Length: 427
Ligand SMILES: *Cc1c(COP(=O)(O)O)cnc(C)c1O
Image 1 (cartoon, rainbow, N blue to C red):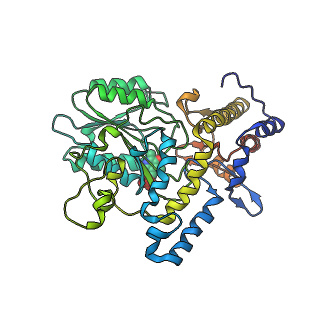
Image 2: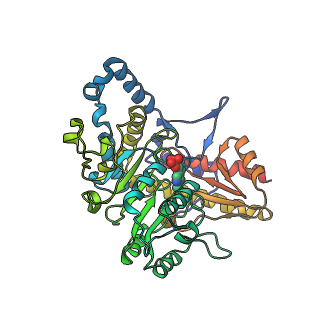
Image 3: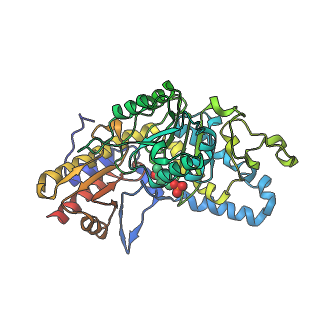
């Protein structure tokens, strides 16, 4: 991206949009508005916008339910009995997995707990978990309660790798060093693929290899990575992963998440798991006999029959990803995020007293589409004024604004508008 020349003008932004091969996708989403004014939406990292196709997809299932009742499990257009299977191919493609390694089910935190049942098997000797400091709170609570559940003290069992004194990002060499230093006691390396706060993308193949080298398991929370950065979970030899579908995947608030279990664990019926009928051998599921017999692959971790209304929204959204592909998305994403970075740098230069800086990595290889901006000189009131001016972004204490230009529906003009509004507010 170093070769890319940016300009701070509306003409430049519009020319970029004109040349953008993905520009038509913007029309496929509903943009929130305030009165008659359409808002500039930069919070795809929290809740993706609604694809227009979702309404018809959900309405279809409502009609089928009205028409068929229970018979819809087998006789509806997309039979509910196997509905989740429709989501597997696009989801597997999105994260670089084999179809047998992925299934959509439950919610994210629930899924990580279920995966820990199988993959966090601490012993008195090997019980430690390495993770990033300032993890997403749900993950931190999960780690605390999981270690406690197994009889360990979280302060002893959880090793948090933090940025060095005076730095904002975690150095990969420090993670690798923590893995080496705890080699004999390490059970699990568990990281967010992309950190929700800084937007830092970790080198998952490298961390996974380092975990395996000392006999530990490698698992990831991909809430901020799925649909944002290219993933090759199978090839990277990741043991397990889980993610939600309502951030970059635009599937509707709180909708079903997904899991990845590497195929080398998919037939390990010796692994402990919490069972439910939907994870039971499909051939004998309705014989209703005692004796849990898990399905092969990720599907063997399912518990319950699929929530069709939510999954129908998810299907409409995943259809778009299947059509676009991560390669094209990533290409646009790097340019668009680069333009945002350039715009913020210009503001920092023009308003030196406001102490504006970017905390997200500068290297496009180490980030997705999020730029986290420290506005130390201003803080919350600046973000509030920005939202009042129609730019929807996210504020985190003490003074971080997190902005995500999502390549599926954000434009270069959106980024230009952000720069123009901020310039007015700072002046
Ligand atoms: C969004 C997010 C969650 C949310 O978990 P839910 O169980 O879906 O509420 C968890 N972890 C991370 C890292 C997230 O970004």
